[in-house]
Amino acid sequence: MSQAVARTLDLKGLSCPLPIVKTAQAIKELASGELVEALATDPGSVADFIAWCTSTGNELLEHTEEGGVFRFVIRKK
Amino acid sequence: MDGQTLSLVLFSGTDDKLNAAAVLTAGAAAMGRKVNVFLQYWALDAFRSDRITKDHGVAPEAGSEGAAILARHGGQHWSDTFRQAKSIGEVAIHACSLSMEVLGLSMEDLDPLVDDQEGVASFFMNVDGPVTFI
Image (cartoon, rainbow over all chains, first blue to last red; front, side, top):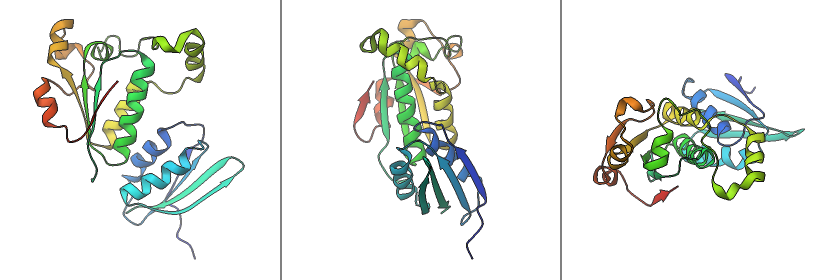
């Protein structure tokens, strides 16, 4: 059984760097181990979320794309 | 966090260059990097509280076609991007004291985004890698 997402961020329509910046802002309010789901339409956000997670130590559990919307599930460090 | 400080010297006061600088600042702050910004001349003038959100034009290389493209794209104002950067990371924005003197400014004239006024020596005290000039 998968863990429930604590918060979903609608980042559709936002350009760089806002998807990452808003995720960084939101994740501050979560507890360690909680999950955040981010939905973005900026194609550059795929590489950005991977880089951001690598650099900050938060874990990127999933990244998928459906109908031009990129979905990321991240576990807070 | 790990990683070098992003050190930016902002000279140009046009909205496109300030936006590019704000994007770099917010991205670096989100990545957990410290950001050290030094405002000189026209960039400093753009941070005056009475005109920070006014139209500062675009760089000459944009031409009229480029200016129209930028106006159409819209997006949030660069000052809001700097504010977000400060809310998520360690971002210091310093006013160059020589530019303050040349432009006849005091700290009360500047937007609260600007932390303090300093000379080049104190700016370089916080530099631990390359300096980018915009």
